[in-house]
Image (cartoon, rainbow, N blue to C red; front, side):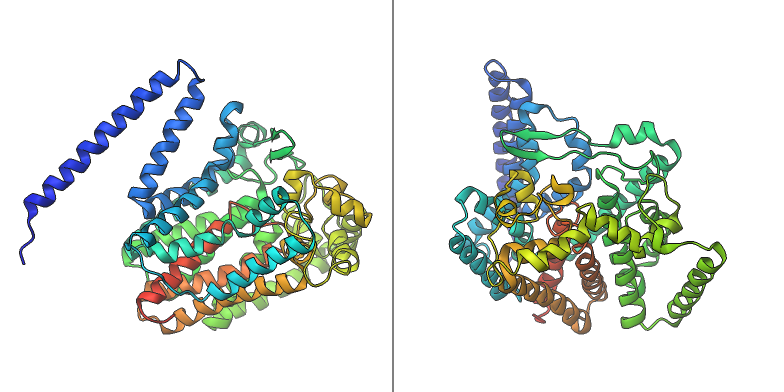
Length: 510
């Protein structure tokens, strides 16, 4: 049957005309609105309406815009006026719920059919156990809602991506764009190292923003020397390091799988070699160790690359030799505002550092107290979402559990969070809830590895291997901060995991 191109053109013309008149009406209402409301609020409302329309019309492209925007969000929010800050702060998160609504609407209208995923059962079990914990601990609805949101908001992206099933062409363009974003952040990192304080002050989102008793943004204090730790537009050096490490791991997988065309391979190598030193300049040990684990998983365990094995042995010999020649007293190293790269690395193994963290109420103290005090007081189902160690308890200033257990309020006794996402969930969801979450996490890892082994598409294989390796990196990151909640890392984990599973479903693998 020959398609009626004239009718298709007319339909497109009618849609264009409708969009034009709708946009004109929106602008007219916006101008009228400035009579009664602030211009900033009106502009924010107009942009919000356009975002909703765009998400329903082109949800996969809205997902891509969301992914590209997030690394720049901490810097952009710095310039947002107070009267619309709450909308801007949670606008990107609202995109997740909006896309979920789009998926639900399309399922109701029959545009999208129900799809099974490897995570369905595990996700439902984790949600059920979290609700059980809420009921058993009689957590207030407001605290419970924010706590559940903190744990599950970005996991939803996995299901959104699987149901939207973006084409390989869109995913390729998104990954290329994110590689360019990584290169931009690397360029800013080099500039920070050279320029120092003036550029740091311009990029750093130092102001704290609140709404009533809710802390919207804590702000960042530069406790290191200017230019010493670079952070780009992501607000903190560790946020930059883990973000870049995640995408560089994906890049390593694509290069190892030789799934790139000749015209793409050279730029990929250029971005990797240009950006990797900035992961070092970020001085984030979480990023260093996470990237190293993911890289060795790909190079040594999967690819059995003897060159990397030889280089690793040589590197180990070099480190031992450096310690012997330099006479560095590793056990006495402590954090300081101005450290050498070597001191920053070896400080991770310093007894003095661990003691300082314990007695200074840092991460080590909270690892110990979670095991000794928090979990034993409610071992199976925890104390409920929003009560211990994560971003929700910090934002709410919820000291209830800490007071009951006679503990200080998080890191340094003031921050609420405990710099360890796994232990935070252990305290909130209990051993059963954390176990279910780990099952969900491992299930996604296993699905990625299965797709890597069975897919016939080299690009899909590369992405599956990269995501599996990146999950190992994130598992390390989550031991050192609340990265499973961080907007600069967690969304990409679940989005790319959803892409892999979506491709695997198209091939009938999962």
